[in-house]
Length: 459
Ligand code: S3P
Image (cartoon, rainbow, N blue to C red):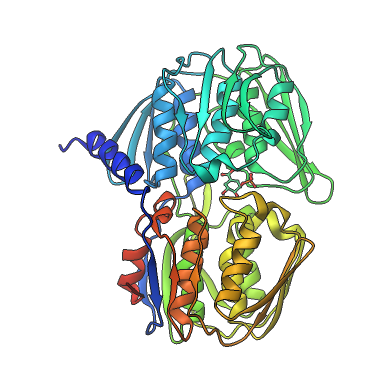
């Protein structure tokens, strides 16, 4: 049996070191994309599987784990907090947890690289334990707001010992072994804020309640329930949810099957829609209704997207997706849909560039605080490639037509900006180049090879 743990750590070091120089990549007009593929496991579910494995007693066996750099960083942090984590084969990992309340004091900085989700969820975990941990990340993560996470954690009893300007990384957090039960209304629809509060509240002697006016992805709630916690979710207002967690459950290790990430499947899916004569079958994609806003929007635009064999696997809804080249028309995307497709606006903007007429995407303020200021990065990239667009307040308006291409796009350490503009280049008249394709490994390490297998041309 090969020593996969060693291989993984070496790969991780190599990935980290290689980020010091950038690596441009160009996408060229390609023939039809055809065939079938299985994109990698869901990033949100992968982070949570490792973290709940850490907090459980027993061995959590995970299959289909995303082996992207973001998730590897979370695995490293879980190791520092006491978990024994082993890779047994491609996507097959086990986590022997130390159990809620028994985490170890980390001896080193928890460095999350580019990973917003890993760092923020882990702040919740640390906040609910008598530990002191230093959190850090790359230049992109150091720019992202953490106050929105720290505010509720402070109410729960954690303390911030050190922080960078405006509540940013690097920061030092001191947790408590007796988190206070709180009721908290999240100021924005954010699964990361909700999850940090719930993960801290796990070790509270009382009940923790999170209110959200727009429902955000519910993987934390589903997985906590699956691992044995007492947690309920009920409607709150017209689009929201009230989540109630009873503290101090005994979390029991369970087997987790990670479904395919719809946010990664989005790239080959849109590529097939905009490259003439394409047809793809994308296997095993998660179709959790809180993640499917892109599919709904593309269908409204006229895209031929069919869910085949819908089923439930590992507690999540999944389906194979058949997608074919389609003529698109512009649509008006309501702000209320944003939480269910928050990571998909860069690739939706690419689809909108090829549509007939105007697409208006409303209520995108949260895009300004992602891995980059995505609103600005999308608009700049579109303009460089001859697409007319504007930002009015928090709305992005794209005028679709034939796309010229020819641009050299700045990705600002953002994997989804990189993949989106590479997809644009497959269907535009001239080559599209991104300044750095390395960050793609944070969420979709096999992007280039899987796309090339389907007929995509990169150089
Ligand atoms: C995520 C939540 C979203 C999303 C991110 C993953 C999660 O962030 O953009 O990629 O796994 O909880 P917000 O909570 O900031 O909306």
